[in-house]
Image (cartoon, rainbow, N blue to C red; front, side, top):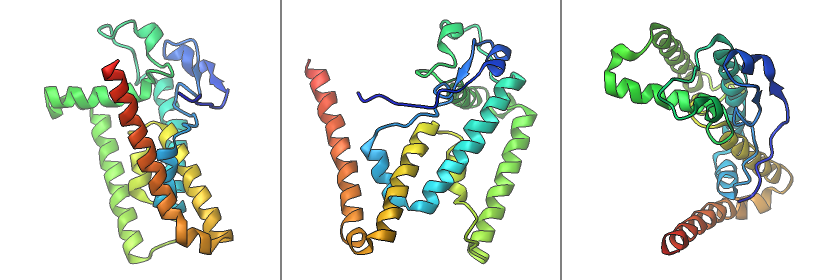
Amino acid sequence: MLPRPGPGFVLPALGKLSGAAGISAKNLSFVFDPSLLLAGFGAIIGFRTGLSLLLGDIFSWGLLRPWGLFQGFIVPSADEPDPATMLVTEEWPGPAVATWKVVAETLHNGLGAIPVSALLAVAIGGGAGIAGAWLQHRHAPRLLPNIPAFGLTMVIPASISITMFFGSLVGKALERYQPSLAQRFLIAAASGLIAGESLTGVVRASIGIVG
């Protein structure tokens, strides 16, 4: 597996308050995932959507998640295996775990398990999404980000969106400086990257099963 480089900064104050020694960029999934599949998807979805993913990463993983850790919204629970060493790590990033833990608890206990503050956040996010969609269809402002892509970044690791953004950036550069080449080969090459890595994953899994 290829290495996943990420920025080296840490948030020691937030880490101390959330029960961890320090929260690095990798803990918040701010890493570059060297996945050709994700880069191929980025080239296909286009630069505007890729940029929206990056902006969503900065907002959700760079601002909201650290703020949630600072406020104590993300707290290891006693029934998690060795939470002091496993939660908020690169292998088990706390924000992502907390997101899907809440989803599981909601499905198990019903809507009554959702805090009032979370319902308020749902209302605000839904209102922003409706307003953004209306603006896109009525006025099509060039500077408005892709709202679904922006929201998607709140429930997927930042590493996925970062790699897709770089893929869209490469595609945009080809379209601008080599338009003929991009028109003939960009989609086909990106599709090949997606298919190639997918097939490689199937082969590796099969080899692992066979032993």
